Image: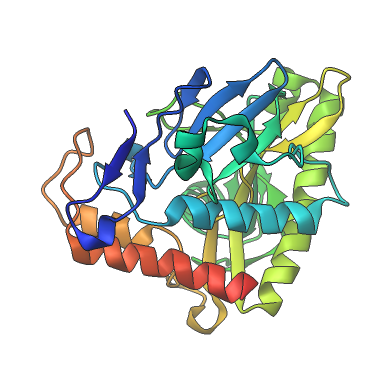
Amino acid sequence: MFSVYRSEPQFMNALHTSSIHSLPLLARGKVRDNYAVGDNRILMVASDRISAFDVIMGEPIPGKGALLTQMALFWFEQLKAICPNHLTGDVPESVVAADEVAQVKGRSMLVKRLKPIPVEAVVRGYLAGSGWKEYQESRSVCGVPLPEGLKNASKLPTPIFTPAAKAEVGEHDENINFAQVEKMIGPVLADKIRDISIQLYSTAAEIALKKGIIIADTKFEFGLTPSGELVLMDEVLTPDSSRYWPVEGYAEGSNPPSYDKQFLRDWLEAQVWDKAPPAPTLPAEVIAKTVGKYEEALTRLIG
């Protein structure tokens, strides 16, 4: 069902779950609802859902879907010279019924239907999160050896490729090493994805740094066309798939403030909750502060 929150002013026009009856539903992810448009295109609708600890919250974050879409479109444009992307250039509103346009406008992309590659192409430029935890245990991340003496949030000597195997919705992605990627998709494609991913990250990190944002790490997703062309797909370099830090808050040795959903995670950690559905009800203050984090990231990046 088309789920829009209207009980509180801050929920006006927030889209938790889309319902496009004129197109067949392919899948619902943590954030995006995907619909088939013929045999060769997909309508990706970015909802205002938010997840933490692999659990989707019951309340939406108003404007989040539109913000993520705007940011992804910005990065697809910036990076198109490095790798082709899945955008068709077609207007999303053109493929839905008139009474469905409100669910689609400003929060959707009409994209090519591709064969997804089952690898999350994670690139890290800084040591953080699970990477910092693994480094403390082994002085490496996903099989990539790193020098002694690094701290939490340390900048790495060079960006590293630390892939993960894609998991089903609600499950955790599994960190894997490069040899495992080679076995999954072949050495030639594995090399290409690693090299392109590092180039994409390095280019984006340089652009963001000029805007006062450190992109500590990110993940890319790729697919193949029927002819075998490698294409950048899904969403790219948003706070949902990347760790964004404001430059002025960065300090090696501690967790910098971030523009992602860390505020939400911190609030949830303070609740009595077993990290299984259903999630605790989010208070208006938490929703508002989470909205503010996303909006600040977009404003700083794009203006």
